[in-house]
Image 1: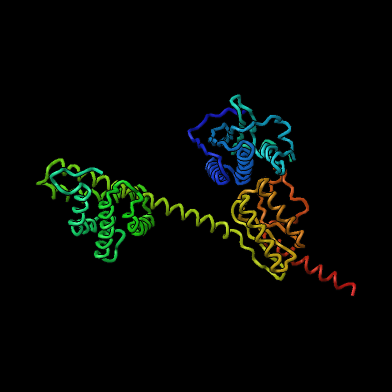
Image 2: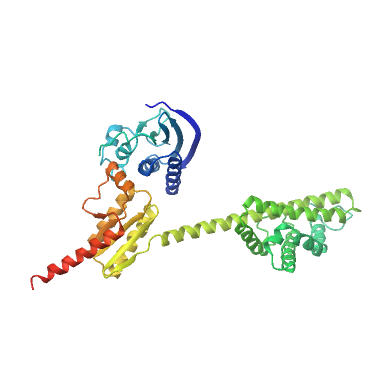
Length: 147
Length: 294
């Protein structure tokens, strides 16, 4: 993992209803723009955040998103952590498969988001729920280019 | 209610309303010079004085009813209309709720000064009691003001939400039997439902065989938005109209591919102009083809 010094910029946002997703998309986009992300990078990160925030709402029964501006060796980055207190993600590998959906969706949310960002981690913390962490850096080229 | 001292003959609230009634003219004159009334009533000073008198007569009524702490006291009802107009005017000038609340707080001080001057000869405990009642009454007035403003804001939000639902989904007739929907903003479930209904109705109304969904104004296309788009396309197809999705920007195209979204056999174009060209070309070809067998 790329070591980074964490800056003070930290935003906590609740995920309780549909309109909260709009706020998260806006925040991620404006922070990514400030961090010097290009348009494509911004769009990818915002899209991944949108998918994961909706997962938090639909599967986790709501939770919160924490957006942190990072200072990497090659430039600033953005990390978003989604936590909920739902049932967690029991079979991570299966959940990441494209086409796997428990909510009548397209099943592209988790696996697709993973391809859109450079850092992706799913955890089931001991206190329950699920925690999904994503991060992208403005300067680096997208790590995964597979489709 | 607090009973007045045995020697006064009047209860404290009665004394308060009597004081307010007696001093209405002077209080109104002083209030009219305060920034609050001056800023709202810019045309004439008489107008401001009149508004002050209206608010005061409401306060007198509340004092008479003895319900100084009751937001629902009928006395406040006529004041609410006046307050709505005043707070709306202040909000329009860019003041926050807290700032407007502070401006209303100043009204009390003018009245307290006058009460002090009036009761210089009265028993100290009696004037202290009146003072307390007056402070209570103006505290309640401030809560009424804040409540009025919050209610107004709530109504504005409701109205705007409704407007957004309707505004964001016009269906435009571009050509004979050709309609287009310029989509703007995020397509969440509620809005995409409205879009779909409007489009399907327009297809029937214009007897359209081609519909263009333009997503230039959609900031993010994630899997849910894509799913909504595909459902809309599938429904339109069932009604005999073919859909073209246009306005797919480079960043969105790359993101969709990496996300693994595949719009399948839906025709897509980069711009609305391209989509229109495609539609017209297709129609020309179809007309040509239908002419050949003759």
